[in-house]
Image 1: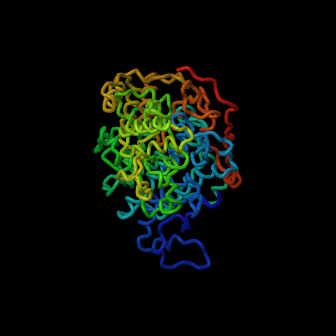
Image 2: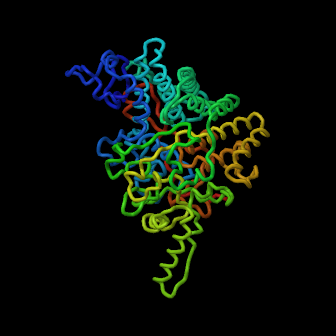
Image 3: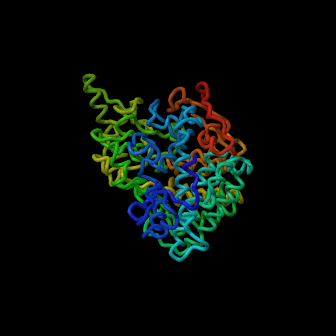
Length: 569
């Protein structure tokens, strides 16, 4: 799209925090020159801040009205990707619930608005990075070093996401597979009109070049919070990149470096009803936070927010798509069934056995009241608002059940009666647990015994009774080793809802299984594939292909014509 191509001599006002700091502008122009920006008080620092502050809070896609429920920044893409697989079972209907990505694949065609969503977001984030880097002439000054390091780091993260979302095949399968066009701080508008999709090999080199540039720039940076990247995040991103490249030695090396100074979540921290996955802690390398002044909190009853989608503990008098309108995104029934009772992560999801509680009374009315009372009592193990959970399960969701509902992501400070507070939570973007799992997988691909030892050490912090070899179901790519299947299971449970599902399915060349006996995926969406689904390769928006003649698009996704025969585990 023409509006996304950046000419280095000009800096657009839109999407930055420059308001009020430009002393002099040309009233006949909507642009600000590079020289004007450099003269503005605090301009460089403000532009650096815009790189990370723009990850959330604004209605970047839908504009000021904020009526699109998935328009809440970077964490929205976690859900867009995760529902494409099998680990999240969506409700039967409702566009508020990501059904475009879950089932209606014609809605991801190049001519649709949903197709525009990732393209607009990511390339505008990249634009913010490019603007900062374009302001540096030669080597960064002492005052510019940290900002340049942040810009290189974030640009690498964005392009890594894009490469994985748009590549027709992962790096480990085909280095020559096309991904997306690369636009850097030197790309001109003329060059952008004939800018072909970079291959995996080219874009991964570009990503590593950015991270290599960031490493010395952030070497001495001491941040005040986890909302800007530091050296540990650079190492973490390198670990992710090398994992994709199957460069096992470097993946292990950088995963270990990223862990320095961090400790894993304890059981109490993981299951905290006031701070569980809503507040930075010693396990978070990187995160973002929603603020009380953000438009997607202040407008539209805060319904267009991460909290509205993933926090179900908000009382009926308040708002929230998950808790009060449509119903929650639930964990896949089979995945849940594989989590042992002794694994404390099982308590992040409500046991479907509660739905089977039945207490008989003297009349139908009394039986109903006694049953509800007993179910609410059982739900108290999961929340200090068990009545609210019961209401959501039986009066909001069409499923009329509480089983498999998630309580992983908690309302801020345990607040249930005010969504404007409850939804102003932090969201993890990188945790030390992910780094430990990368280290284990990478080590095991070099020396399986060493990998098994690391994986077992990790798993026993979650389940003291863990025994290696119990979670290596082989389906999809059966060439994947039992060891990698075991690591994959740990990733699916540990990182559920954090945006890794599709990336792992593509990287490991897995299929998906939604149709099986006892499935909780809705009818007409119960699909099984033994190969990676074609719908996981996103299309490029048509306005971009019209403008950039060098782009060849991915095929439009086609949904299966009917439910698959039940899979036998």
